Length: 535
Image 1: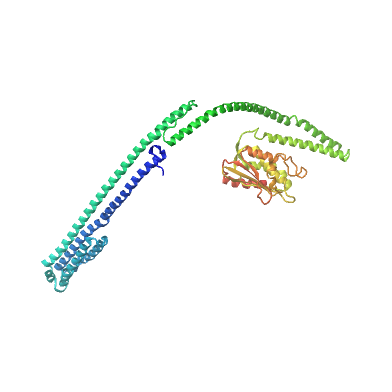
Image 2: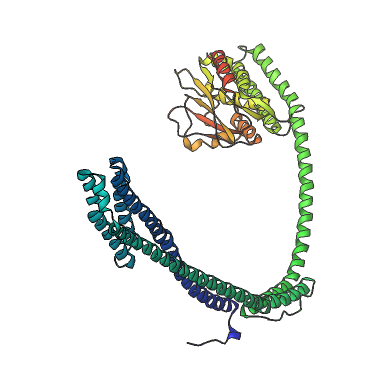
């Protein structure tokens, strides 16, 4: 294993080494502090949970013993059994205190022997003094009882009291020793914390000095060289300075400088090419503007000049049909009928194309459109075809959307008309318009029970002039759904055929959402509109 000199270590290695050293020192200090803190906590717990309760119990024990002695003497004087109550209660309390004190001490604690000795002395005093005196009073009277409470009896009780006093003194000595140990561990813990703080401060100073020498200084010098390159001195070499990482960075920056210098010529050439492309795009934009003007002119001509001779052809063909019907042979009548039909279909195609081209070009601006009101107009406009087919048109409460009311009316008229047109034979058509709320938009559905649309033709029906049936089977120019798609996209939505329905056709489209329908008005409006639309 090769050991690298400190001067050749990378910045990461140096920082890692410093962190490892400081971390090791702090870990040792933390371990020592944890041990000292544990010892300090043990001392505090001893004072709070052992020595303190022992002192209180010792004081209470002395009081209980005095109460017993006083109760016996009072009974010996008065002979009243009520005066014995302090004695009886004192005996019970003494046993409780002794048990509690013994429970606080370990099996090898010296204080345990003292407490047991006091308990034994108290028991001997009761057996040899208190109980005989009580029995003498009960059998021979107070004089006999007082005779037993002589100086020897008092001397025995004083010995018991002296033992309790000594116990209190010993407990106080233990408490003082534990408190001194706790103060010592606290001072040791504080010293360890001070040492840890000194280690952290020294590590911070060493880190700052290292960063200033190894990072800040070299980075500042490198930044000065980079600024010179940024000011246009692309041929100035950048010197490698600092630790290996910064030296590698300086080398990479110098490589980037060389590449930038090499790319400048290409950038100049690319700029010239971009300027040429922009000039070509400008010419194309001007050509597009001219083309749009030509399309506007064509739309005007198609709506006025082209329709005039077409109307004249259709009118004279209709005159020929009415005046000479039956006077020529059957083939001539058929030819005239073809001419009339062709002229009329050409008029419809031109009108549909004009309507298609005007969507989004001739606009009155968006307003809030109530689709319930629109459906009332749709029901009125499709009334004739609905009555002819014996069909039914219903709709649930529809929302208010932003848009142009004439265009949305045209959209729904096309969908409803198609539903009545492409109906099943011998089956009364039924069309239902519904809406549901999605994320930020409304989804409107036109559902019918007609002949349906195969999934393979779901996209074809929205292409202009695309028909799935001959004009003899179903009349029309095949532009209605293309117009509907353009209307929906103009309003910022999308339209499609739901191929998952079991029967008929379901065409769905989305519109941006503005407001929720009012449930109260929905109930009233729904009942009225549906009744009006029923066939």
